[in-house]
Length: 399
Image (cartoon, rainbow, N blue to C red; front, top):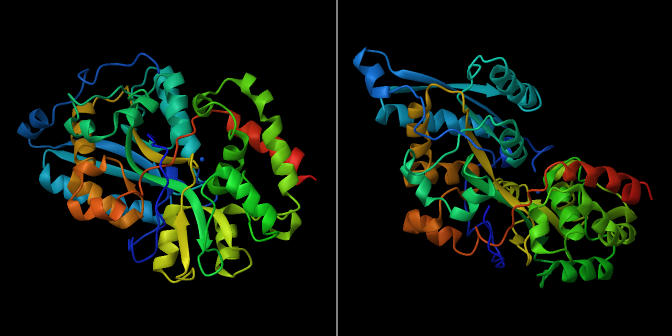
């Protein structure tokens, strides 16, 4: 995902008056997170036009998870698509958060291994880890603009991050959220942030990184602060020996953070502290802050700023099952999802950044996001995130 190392401009609730909280990575608050040779998109697929001539539209199954707002989004977009494409029907299968995302993926893999095709799952939504794992398991179709024309509107670097195995249809980012009534000059780099934490004891908080992506992003950004930029795309376990300096910094910060070493649970835990005035500055998901500003759950004086180099952000992805025999119909749906019309609905409903480049969005939307949807980075470190959480528990939380 893309990202350019420019500072995000300070936002306010007035600047971005969007409607509903976005779920990042298709997960709820507690888990929201920071190729292989695959078949050609022109491979075997059902033809919607051929099916329509027999009187029945082609139906494919779309599995997704996330909070209620994710379901509300698809409940809006799918009827829009079907009205414009009467030869295709999308059967949505909503998997409530925490109840079946992994079993759904396991079902895709099991069906492939058993030679049973797609296993009834043609299109799947999830985060970067599942994209990466699916690449290793060779279950995702490789995509290109010849089959999905609007894919050309997605940043090439974003598609390169996932080896063209997924469609990044919306994004969110971790940023600094601060109360401007008490913080006039928020930090602009990680070094400045660390100095600020030392200078303002117990006025900064981050959540336990194993319970939410904003805390995980802070920890990971500290660990990789002095490493080469390429390291944030490296999942080789040998890099773990380079974390020592970062963990020493995190351990030292323990006596300066909220409660001299209290780490709230989940992304919402630190937002509650900010809302209550117990802390002045936190890492937080941009979409969560904007939604809670809109609902009056945070003081109007709360603003957002990205640091440079940025915290992590990331798209939520749509993956096409390589074994699907409904690919042509799925491609039509994905092309619609990446259209400016559908992307505008996604932005309005999810408080996130569009999946396509801003230059392809309506001018009003471009003006809203100018300088905002830039600056964050995509950390694609595979299973190393789990290792970070384990070591954080022993080296930092246990102290």
